Every structure is written in C-alpha cells, then in structure tokens.
Image (cartoon, rainbow, N blue to C red; front, side):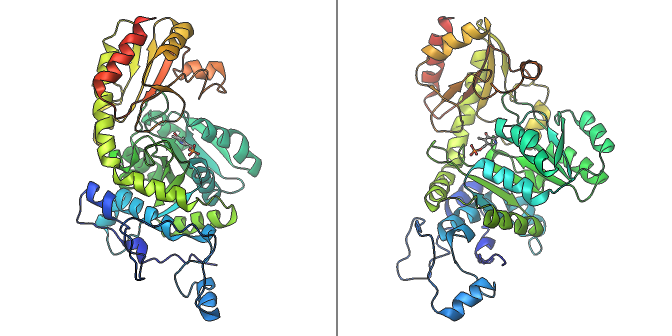
Length: 422
Ligand SMILES: *Cc1c(COP(=O)(O)O)cnc(C)c1O
C-alpha cells in the first residue's frame, strides 16, 4: 500500500517568504475543506478515519485517492507539522529546482524512532556505515549493539577532521551511509557538511548522507542545502522548545527515501501522537524568536565563563579561536545554545556547582525555553568507557549547559554565585 497523504498538501512551500513567516503560516489552514476552519491547527485525536462509502475506502487503500485511513498511516494534525518542517528545512533545495524537487518529512514518536527507522529504512544485512565518533548516547548504542544484530556495521571516525574522514571514506568506498551530528555533544566539534558530502559522493554517488540536526534546528543550519540526503531531529529539544513532548522527524528531498521512511513508520509503528505533533507545530511558530534569544544569551555566557578564574576551559564554536570557527560561521546562522565547560577541581568542584546553582534546572535534555545544566561524565555519558570518555574531552570536571531565554544578567549571577562556592 502506498502513502495516501495528499502530495499537494505537502507542496505548500511559501517560497517567497522569510523564515519567521514560514514558521507561522506554512502548512496551516490547507487541510480543512469543511465549514468550520479553525484558525489554529486542530488536534485530530482519532485513531481511525471514516470513509464516505466503500468506494472511497477502496480508493484510499489502493492510493488512487489521497486522504486519511488510520493515524499510524497519517494524521491531519501531524501533516501540518510535517508541511511546516518541509518549508523550514527545505526552502533552499526546493528553490534550486522547484519543478523536480519535493521536500518531505516523516514525523516519529521520538528522536530515536526517527533515527532507528531511518537506519532500518536505508540499510540492510551486510551494509557498512561510516559514523561520527561522538554521537548521542542511544544512537551510539544503536550502532554498537542493535544494528550489528542485523548485519549492519559501522566504522567510527571524527568527521570534524575532514582529512581523516577522506582517508576512511577512500578505504571504504562501498559504505552505504555517512551518519553524524554537528555540532557534537558535549564538546561541540563542527563538521563541514558541504565538504564531507561532496567528497563522500565523489567516491560513491549513491551514498546516503544523514545528519542529526537536533542541536541546530533548521533556523541555524539546513543540511539538505549543504548536500545531505536526510536531516533528522529530536523534536523533543529546540523544535518543541518547552520540554513538554518527546518526538522526532526525518526530512528529505529524495522521493525514494521518503517512501522508505514512510514504510518504516507503517511497519515498525513509531508514529507520533497527534497531540505531540500539535505541540511541536506550536513550538515551531516561535522557533526563530527563541533561537535568537538563546544564541545571544549563550554568546554572553560563553565569554563570561571563559574569563572566569574557576573555569579551566570552555567549548563554544562561536569563539574565534575554536578550531572549527570558520566552518561554523559558514554553515550556521549563529553558534547555538549549548556550552560545555570544565571547572578547575574535577568532579568535586563540578558537583559543588551543580548542587548549588539557582535558576538552571539540574536535568538532562536540552533546547527548552529555560536553562538546564548537567554533568556528562556521570549522566549523559556515564556508559561511555572511561578511556574513550576522557579522550573525547568528557572529563570529570566537565559541565554542559543548555541556555534558555531568561534575562541573561540572572543567568550570569546564578553562575557567578555557584562558581564562587568552588
Ligand atoms: C535527544 C537527542 C536524540 C534522541 O531523541 P529522543 O527524542 O530523546 O528520542 C537524538 N539526537 C540528539 C542530538 C539528541 O539530543
């Protein structure tokens, strides 16, 4: 059975408009032919959809007609969210070749559902992946333990080191996929998406380039325009933006990939709840405003921390002497809302700060309107073997913050007070 989602609805692009206008309007109001057209996206909290008659049911199932059958196969609330993501993530690729390029998104129940479904959609027994050496913990585990069970094996490389990547790519010209995050978590290394994609495709034109764009969102970085085939998000983070949902989405401009992704949501069943995609769509409307404030707060905090005598080192791609500053400037609109920093005094000092800081919530996750703080070595990266952990910069004194939209003076005061106690 083919996708019955209305292809025309997903074509809503608002190509002439800016990012904020698209974030507000793309996908809205296009799905409601009835008498009451709600101004805000409606929540279709229904498992199944009624057919007008048996002929219509037959046509929907044979994909002769577009429409809705059953929420795992598509839901109107979710379609609005997907259409808005198409407009935000895909404008540049669509503009290049408007007649032949269709950007599509498939929403999932979580970021991990989007990532694992993408891997299973595009890879099979015997396939090889070249993957970044610093990935979200569960993605790391997916490549280390789950996918090998199905004969899919990955080679790990620091993709921010382009020369090293090129060497690995040349040694593995049959690799089926390159998978990475940029900037990485928690030490914020930046990979040149355009240069990497260009090289990988010069070696193997059929290779899939898949980028986890969670840390940036389409507001800061659009991987498809830089040569990637799939841009993935945990919408739990900046896209939802308020810490109230778990969700994921995969965006692509390759029709064949979209069909494979849709097949996975059908067969593996990682479909999102309409309520969660409703929240994610609401989150997108203020994404530009939130990201602007988050990025400017982050810049101020990064410089404050760097000049503090209790702080050993600060990771932030917006410093001019960050090893990947030029790449970050080239491919990102701003430098994001994540900072990691190492306090002097190791574990004891880090814990002192975490247990005494105001305003920042001691919690994992990221991308909320309010600021979060956590200790990677004992929390998000606790399962990484110590030797690898230390090699990748996740020391016992390392603290990661996800900066929110609070008044920056209050965040600085909170950090200053907690640092004083060390
Ligand atoms: C949180 C996160 C994920 C996983 O997303 P879930 O929504 O928690 O499943 C994947 N990648 C990155 C970069 C993340 O931060």
